[in-house]
Length: 300
Image (tube, rainbow, N blue to C red; front, side, top):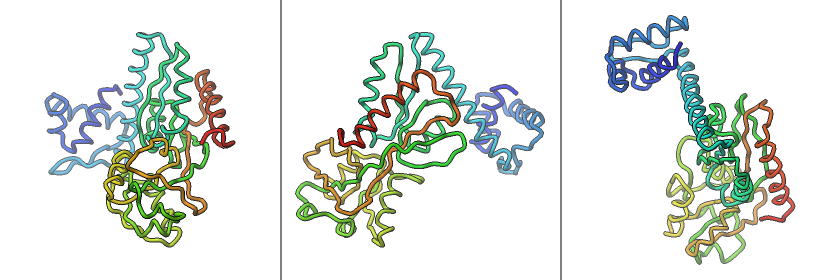
């Protein structure tokens, strides 16, 4: 089996049609058909169900597609890192993050790592589930997210639980008295991020539902800045991690909730069972110090 077989198979699986897959690969259909058949013979498994209007993956084909994509991504990441190391003679360390954790101490950790002139830091904005997949294929070395995801190849560490605060339009009536979840539930919610769960929106809405409160979602958006802009436009409120208060937006007020247990986790994800190299040991040391500062109140 060669890498080209994986490329051919992925194209056929994504297009669901050999003619379109061949066009995508800039090759004729008969050679592609032969390559797919050779791959199936080598695996001893039927990867596709041939139908008059195209191809349908078998259960084995669905599993092989997932693994083939991971292999392809791992090869791509390895090639890119090898080129960087050869060009710069630096060790590459890649970090995945969700935007809301970047308002806290993560920039401090990156600044300290960048003091090492032999280290090149790469940053990838990824949702927590995307971080897990990126860890498995070697695209990133550590991820910082909000969601607990079970995966046998990845271990997750709860760093701390961060309080959630309400972002409301500047001068809103909600800021005139101690704020509760019940009071918030009477107003429209701007939810972020949108898309398949689990995500930040699922967690925040569950905080209302667990208290028997109904919530009216007025808008669903993909990122924090858009959510805050809609809040400033009086489209509703949104819940944000406490670190976001550092933005100091003049058109948005950030209000503390008096309810208990209104928080969201900050989670570090790493590959399971992998012995830490010197860079990871340095990252762990810095991270331990920063988390200790946060928990002891030396940093908000």
